[in-house]
Image (cartoon, rainbow, N blue to C red; front, side, top):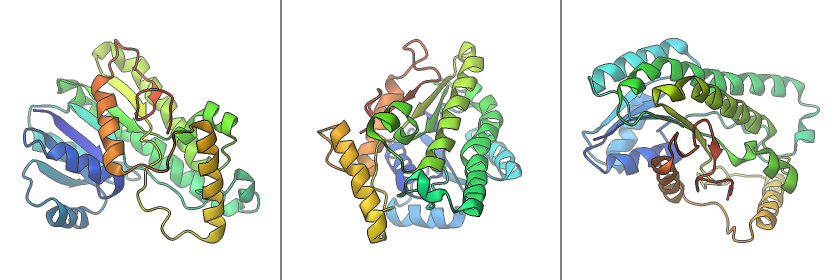
Amino acid sequence: MSVYVITGVSKGIGFEFLRQISEDQKNLVVGLVRDKAATEKKIAAELGDRPNIHILHADLTKYASLKQAAADTAETIGERGIDYLVANGALVPYLDTYGPIGALSDKVEEVDAVSSQLSQTNVVGNIHLFHLFLPLVLKGKVKKVLTISTGLADLDLTNECEVDIGALYAASKAAMNVIVAKFNAQYKKDGVLFLSISPGLVEVGHYADSTPEEIQGLTGFMGKLVTYAPHFKGPISPEESVRHVRSTWEKASIEGGFGGAFVSHLGNKQWV
């Protein structure tokens, strides 16, 4: 039996992680979310009664809530420790999702506000998460800490394909990739694998209400991806993404050179 703690399981690939992993009744899955009641309602409606799922309140922007979640998790899992800690929860801002970085030049206040929110949620919040939950990871058998990143944070992809969208979001994820490497530098001697994984380009409903201008920006981005990867047919489903990500983290090991690395859902640098 493995123990999983996953942030941001209320929707998207986070919910898909929860669904797939909890299918095995031998697994114990603790999901951390901001809205506990709404998430439990969704689980009851879509997954039914799965006694191996436990939902706890946590907010990446509030240290006290993370500290309480760590204490609640310790009580829930007992002496077993955490095998997989999955830092999936993140802020994905609408501000720069579809437009190039130059479109932000006259949005000074918005850039300041969103950059601060991204740093607090996607970087600082995960630093606190790791610090608070690491004692439980060290008690586990598998000892894997996985951060869900993005291929947009890859410098080679950005430069080769001239990907100019999602700048602020990508920067926050790039910063987190460095944090993951720093944790690896300290804790690989203790047998803890820290790894950043991009889930690929996933269809989670972000594009449903896009404006014509946003669709144009998205279409241009997709065209660049086709040039980069001729096999690319469009965003993949959460089910496919999570299946690949899980396969990659199962194969990954410190001995195999994955400590502190940043890889795609396929376990390499092929981002789509």
